[in-house]
Image (cartoon, rainbow, N blue to C red):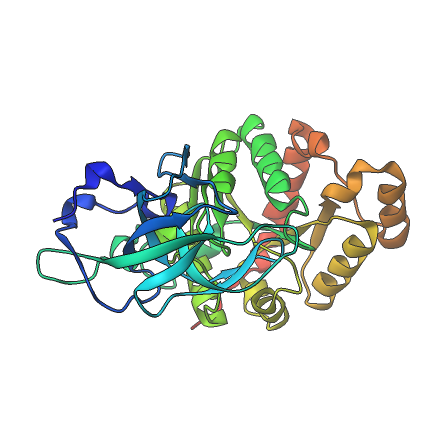
Length: 351
C-alpha cells in the first residue's frame, strides 16, 4: 500500500478522489492512467504543480503522482504517452509523464523519472482520469445553442491567448455578466486555469474535467463533443456566455483540421485572435475568415508595439485591442451585444 502522505500529487490529479487508491501495480500504462514515479534527475522542470496551484520543488528520489499522456508544445516538448514502466520524462509541470520525441532548443532536456507502477483501486482496476470526469456526456439539447460562445485562438504558443481570454473575462465580470471560461485543448496545467479564476470567471472548466490529461491526438469528433459538453455545463450553471481558449496556434495539426472542417464553426458565435507579430495576426485572420468565423478583434503580443498594431489595423480593418481595452466595461458591453446578435446563427453539429 502506498503512503500518499509521502508522495507529491500533481495538478493533473485535481479531480481525483485518492480514497479510491488501494495500491500500485506493475501494469502497462495507458493514456490517462495515474502513475507513481520516482524523480531521478532534475533538468527542465525543477518543480511540480500541485492540485491547489502551488509549485512544489522537486528533489532527487521524490515520489510523485503523474498521468501518462502526450504533449505537443512548440516551445517545450513533443512527447508521447509511455507504453511501459521504467525510464521516461516529466514533460509538463502539471504532471504529464511522456517519452520525449523532440524539444525546443530554448529549454533543457526533460526531467528524468522512473515509472514504478500504475495506481489501482481495491478491485485491482487502474485509476484513470476518465473515471473522474465532472462533465456530463454530450447529449444535444436546444438549450446548448442559447449559450453565446466567444472563441480565442492564437498564432502560436505564448502569443497572448490566455491573457486575452482572462482580460475578456475580467471585462465581462465587471460589466455584470456571468462569464464561464473553458480551455478546450492543451496539456493539463494550472496557470491558465487559475488566471481565468482570478480574472473573475463565473466558473472555469477544461479538458481535465472530461478526464483527458491532454487533448493531443484526440479526434475532431471528440473535441467537438467536448465543446458541446462544456457548453451544456455552462448552460446548466446559468452563465451568460462562455469564453473558450484553443491552445497552441492555428498551424497545430489538430487546430488546423478543426478550424477548417466546419464543425467548430457550428458551435461558436465569434472569435478573437491573439498573435505574437503583425504578420502572424494577418495570417491567423485570413485562416479564420476563410473558415467562416466572425472576428470581433485582434490582440496579443504584437500590440506592445504601436507600429505593429497600426500595420494590422491598416491591413485588416478589424478592431485592435490592448489588454487594458479588453478589461473595460464599455468593451465588454459592446462585445456582449454583438454576441447576442450573432449567436442566433449557431446550430450544434449532430454527431
